[in-house]
Length: 304
Image (cartoon, rainbow, N blue to C red; front, side):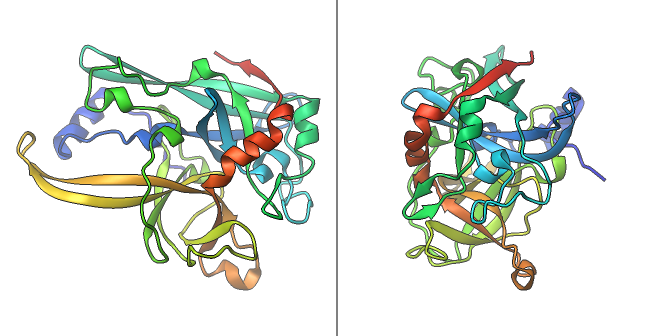
């Protein structure tokens, strides 16, 4: 059974606002997109799904996900994954935001990206950083299909700071092993409408002062599923709990830091039952983009 989430009627929205005290949309939910890996038989059937998110680098938008998602290969061995094919075309979804007459409208625009010869060449091998293959990939994305911070935007609390670029919604937090984290992704194709990700709770499972297997990554303890490869991982700190007299409710104030890119469960049979997964340091993303900038070429077609 697939539980759809993200599209609903106005009546349900009204009930939600009565049930929860002034429910806001967390801006991090607007940073994510499902990725659909399309078949090569001419029918563009979605054979598999994954997760991606948006990043801004030198005023250019990028879609960030795992290298293995786009290449169809194991980043450490180079072997083709269980899905048995290497993608050459994907669907993903841009995000727009509009505030009008006291209502917020969130739009999604499907984008079909066909890999050109330069992109296919780039995906033959994962980027090498810190002496290790890194399971992170980036694709240039049309700026006009996304929205960033806008000081002139009004209409709701935090309107001028709202952005679908995850690196525009970030604050450093002291983090250590055992701290809670959230993995934002699309497990088992659970998305529709606004395509908001599922927030899967986990915890940091390795000491953050060290990498794992001599690679720039860390472990997370979380019950993740297929479809979540490429998900951003957020560390959350609750700073103040206070009585918000304006809405007559106790309110917690949260701060988030984007700390990593989730890449999957540990595949060793003995370790699979531990619920352990691994993630790459988010600080690698600008280096991946800079390393591949000259070859990050993809044919982009908008399906409006």
